[in-house]
Image (cartoon, rainbow, N blue to C red):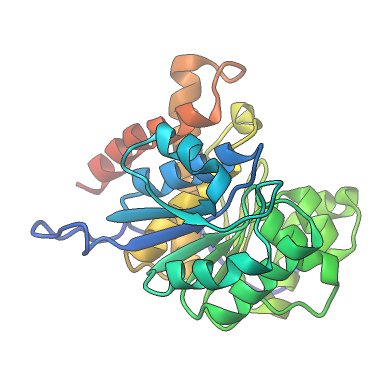
Length: 292
């Protein structure tokens, strides 16, 4: 086991100025989605909204704009040129870069698919954006497809793999990853300079020097879309000024707490990802009440 500093408690939530406004609390841009995967973009956007972001833009393929907009009117949609299958391509890059140019934090990857042009799109966005970025889902798969050594771009990065995605990144079997979750995550964080959030029971968060193992959450969160909510939540915390390690620790805790509160009311088998996004409001009540 590498020598790291263990963090036993999540950090304090971000400060929230009483006189603040939507420009104060962060501009988050979610670059996500494809035809058939519009829910990934919508859930990620909901996670960012419920995470306290002042403005949440979803930069999505043009063919799914109306679908995503119908989920939540507080989401600001940015239609991006796509191909006939509703995916990002080379022609999507310039409009996407324009969309993220003024972002305080970006989410890249949920539901974008794994065609070659989408992979190159991910690579180009990573290289261009120097601010804080959460790389999730197909964004991780896109980088994994090129093989090591890995370069996640010039800015602060949070990587949010589940064990399968982490297996593809590291070239190790899922069994081996699960058998040494802490060590595997620490080593990869040291190699890449990113904060790794290795999801699963006891989510592991590390920057290679510090380690936090989350204690909240339950099996009800093992349903499609919960990771998208987490990615949006993390970006919201980054946009409010938290460091990428603190945002990852606090976000994992709050996300799991929302899952626990949701399961207590709806049961573990019965909860779905949209419930989780809503129960973030209850989780904030608990956390802010404890703070007070």
